[in-house]
Image: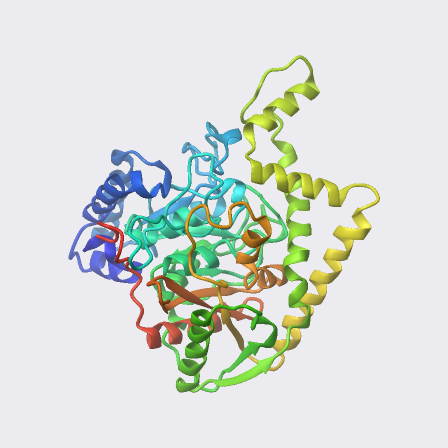
Amino acid sequence: MLTGLTLTEARAGLAARTFSARELAKAHLDAIARLNPTLNAYITVLPEETVLAQADAADARYAAGTAGLMDGLPIGIKDLFCTKDVRTTAASAILAEFVPPYESTVTAKLLKEGAVFLGKTNLDEFAMGSANTSSAFGATTSPWRRTGEPDVALVPGGSSGGSSAAVAAGLALAATGTDTGGSIRQPAAYCGIVGLKPTYGRCSRWGVIAYASSLDQAGPMTRSVADAGLMLEAMAGFDERDSTSSSRPVPAFHKAVGKSVKGLKVGIPTEYRAPGLPEDVLAMWEQGIAWLREAGCEVVDVSLPHTRYGLTSYYIIAPAECSSNLARYDGIRFGKRVDAPSLDAVYEASRAAGFGAEVRSRILMGTYVLSAGYYDAYYLKAQKVRTLIRRDFEQAFENVDVLLTPTAPSAAFAQGENQNDPVQMYLNDIFTVPASLAGIPGLSVPVGLNNAGLPLGLQVLGRHFDEETVLSVGGALEAAAGFAHRPTLHAGAGA
């Protein structure tokens, strides 16, 4: 089935002319028409004539022998990336009708390499959430179901839940995501796909609607580790418009997959053995450790002593930066405007109508910790702790090559569960946040199913700008697990 291929398989089929890019694109558009009304993975689907025109151009390049790295491959774009002349909403009412006159650097790079854009995928509003339930355009539903509970809708994770659901259900071969505290890795784990958060600065943030600027990083969400490497090659690279963009050369990441991992040292952080960690998650972690031992890796216990403060620090730093970044949405320059008698009243009415509850909550938290009298007590202290967390990782990587942890503390939960407990919702990111604070690369690899038939992921963390080793180890886990991403309990998913 064309919608069940990996990027690598589809690229080979297009090159061999086994099928055309038009056929591949049409199969995905048909799948979206059939399943998106149920899953709500896409906010905006591009017109068929636009998508097929992109595919026809790719077919012409294959015929001419000038095909690019992503030529003819249909993908979804998280609706946080600005796309020229295509509505970009950040899943917020305040940007419901925003149509950018420019293209983000990452999407421009993908277009240059020939990718076919299918549409804009759903997300938590302004990327703030772990369940994809705060979108102004409605929640996304996972294509997975618990064994014996076909009518219980599950969350796809967040904030990149639309992207993860689309890839898992066969509505895109791959998709872009953004990761601030785990928003690529956690939804990838929940939906049984691969998610890669590159090193901070590896991919440009220019044209990506900001949540927390010192944490946001774009990355690929795919069906295989090799696909993640391939797509990262197309997305990464220096951008003079982003002051945090790295000028390091972009390696052929996909070639790292399949390399021997014999002799590599794999660190197991003591602090990640959190109290109350479910037995199935712990068992899968132990299985991953065993697989890497069998592949020739040396397993070493390490300590990351400041990990316990990661979540607390994150939920001071990220809302503070969100408060600053979202101040621009005032109803005056662009976005939703509600008329009122005075300028202050316009600000208040526009923002009240345009922002959802979770976004308002985080803006208020961020404004509070940045306010006079609290800046030193909260924000400055959190930044100091962030430095200590980064130092913990740097010291660990003096003795090991990668770290292996669970991606999330549980499998996907049902829509509505934990919804009234913000602390419990924030705990979904407990294993992903520290790597985001440190700016290191992290990869979530699906490795099996829990007792309820839901996917679980393991996380591989590496040194700054060493995505190649992370991908090599991820590839070894993937090969040992032999896990197929396809959801089995949602009618038509992956077809």
